[in-house]
Image (cartoon, rainbow, N blue to C red):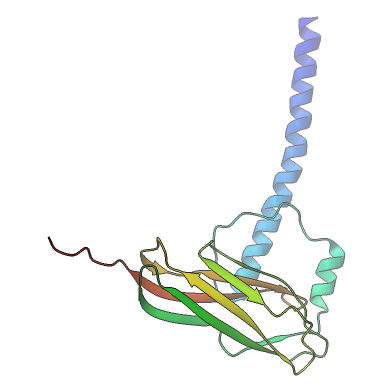
Amino acid sequence: MKTKLTLLSVLACALFLASCSDAETEKRLANLERRVNQLENGGVVRNTVTPTSTPSAASIETNVSAKAAFKWDETLYNFGTIKQGEVVNYTFKFTNVGTEDLRIQSTSASCGCTVPQHTKEAVPPGGTGEIVVRFDSKGKNGQQNPVITVVANTNPAQTRLSLRGFVQVNAAPAP
């Protein structure tokens, strides 16, 4: 009886490990694809959470054949040196230089201190749009490099925008 129970336990563990390795392989593959995409978009590589699912073959095929395309006025904004607690607002402007309507699916930032808002309507070929970014330096100190990820029906599907600057802590008054 003990032998059967041990054998069943070992078999259950083996099945569990085999199923985990497939999920782990998928996670690693998704992570590698994400990093390659980041490198293609300006060399920005961040250690962020790996997506829980990999894109389907249909969505990859759609992205490869995307005919909408961004042309950014700038992809990096350096806000210089600011005092801790100040808020920086900046608008990244773009033109759709593709042949189809450009649709932004989402925008997200690498930290909670940065909030992006994007054009909600489809941008026709030749049309313009914008991503408005708000960076709050409250509680921040030193060099800051928040990254904004834009997901759209373009090829590649993800684009990275960056803010750069230095947050200076206010010196305490001398007694």
